[in-house]
Image (cartoon, rainbow, N blue to C red; front, side, top):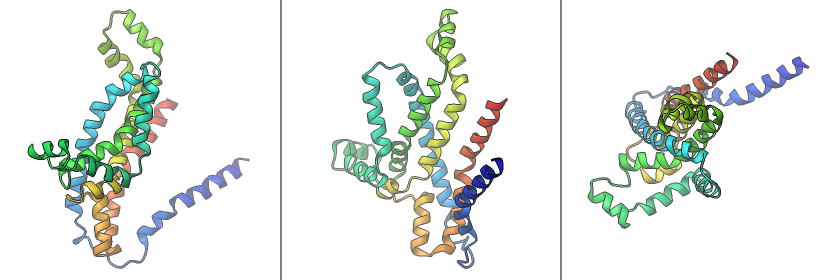
Length: 250
């Protein structure tokens, strides 16, 4: 039985890993100097980092509150969050560019404040927030729901304030789940392409730069950026997965 299970795992692993064979495909010499790796990497990391900080700062207390929100308020709000999660990326980008356009009251006000809502760092960060916030919120809520309420109640009975209970009991116990939520939001925001193409084609982040390189120079200019993209996007969720499994077994 174990031999059959191991064989099934091996076959599935080969199938899942097979796309990586494309990294050694015969496409000709890689064009490192023409692939704009530095600028795309700087744009994606700096702006995605800012978007992630804002998502975590806003989403963490909201997820904590959502866990204990009464019905039907919670169900109604979760329906709204799921709508943002299930929205096709291209549709999200089109809706954002229409809702925040310079002809709208909000878009015009932001433009007068020096915050253009298209082809700008502001648009880039805002689009990533819209694309990743729902993923973080749902995962963070699940992390908080895994904290035994009896422990929080015991802390309150010992005289701890609500914030002290959160800081000393809830947050430490939910940290692994929150780390998973953060890594999911990171990958979702960093890899966003469809919505970013519509709202913030400039400045080029890594996904858009991959598309530009493919259109203008072909695969030899795509593969260098693709390798850097994979090496920058995957380590955080990958490392967390193994770290969390190790902590659960300890």
